[in-house]
Image 1: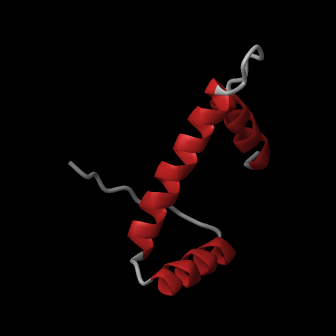
Image 2 (image 1 turned 135 degrees about the vertical axis):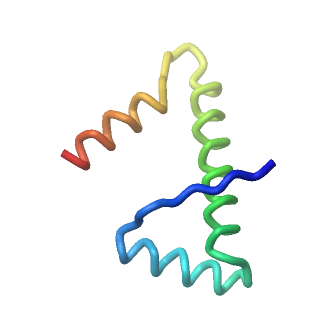
Length: 70
């Protein structure tokens, strides 16, 4: 089952997403859905591929976002 979310984006990012979605001939919603899925897969893969290192990518992202939006 698909769920709906609402997000706010910086204007320049919105235009990039709009441009890329148009290039691909898909909706912005489909583009963002794929991008979020792809990004999540990549983050999970990075954590699992760290081998002997203990890396929590989501904690790194959280810290970065907290700093960015202070």
